Length: 293
Length: 164
Image 1 (cartoon, rainbow over the protein chains, first blue to last red):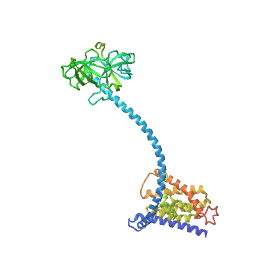
Image 2: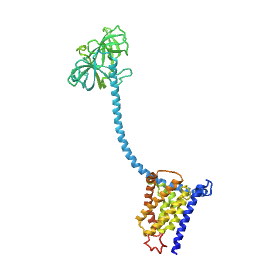
Image 3: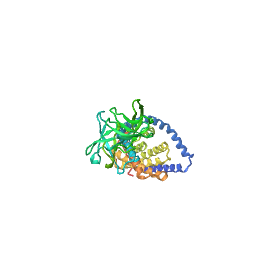
Image 4: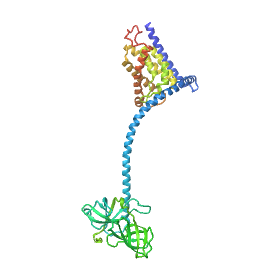
């Protein structure tokens, strides 16, 4: 009995193996429309509603699991992204500052390239480290001094972001009026004590650009008979030995005349915006070509 | 019937580590453990056929695999006697691993090819582990529901129809 049981078991096993192999063989050998495929398609058709219902039943649980999983990773991701955003914002600010500095320095380079200077002239770029605290005086402190080859009365030019639609943003800033080994004070052209010999391009009218307590610039001693139109460019004339000729100062903003005054009253709008001055360039003229005022 | 319903309606939609448990295989293993090699082979054959229908695979491929699994699991249990939950885990792990390797070999012969070690890492091992983990509660539940008899003691070889 036991032996027949074992034999029976083995027989069933072998039969099942043979049937499986036969089914497999027939499945591969017959065409898509064969009987085995037809049975398979019929069986799949019976089971597909179960699968569809199963998908619907399982979906809320799947969604719930997915929701928990994504909430956790979303929270983590949000924190990471926030840190990245902060870092990137910092970088953006830095890059914007660098771009502005680049623009200013290009402006200085422009003055360097386009001007005409005596032979032996060198240039020193310096940063503005302080500004005058009141309107009584108009000056800026720079971070270069005698140790860097600077000396008194050297002209200083600057470049700032666009101060208006037609202004170039670069031009004469002032001159060095006080100096130490590593710092120098530059008196601005808007200072009430400043006076620069200048020329109006076009009519070639000569005069003096002077500052005022209000910070405005005026060009005086221009013959009233000369025709001066607004928006004409005013440049240094080179007289006086402080600034070389041709350095832009500003444009004619307003022209006025008084009957009793033999000169015109010309209001000048400076190219440089002194409120946002950050870098300047000192024109280090050869010693024999510069002199005090 | 239960395996069919659960597998098609529910288990196939729940993925863990990218794989789903194979209830057909698990039930085959449990039946083989509790009822012996003959019942395991027959159940495996039927379950395999249904799986082939449900998963639209060549008819007979899973039937062949599960027949072998059911039969040899039954033989192993007869040889070693009683089984506890940990034994069910190990047997299910081995059975699932072997079934998948065999299935992979058949697939390799018949059609799609993929790197063995790739398949081992992303399919065979994860599914073997998952099947083994699911097999324990399924085994315990079926015993509780008296669908299958509980663990047997070691029986003399004579009364069980000799060794195989």
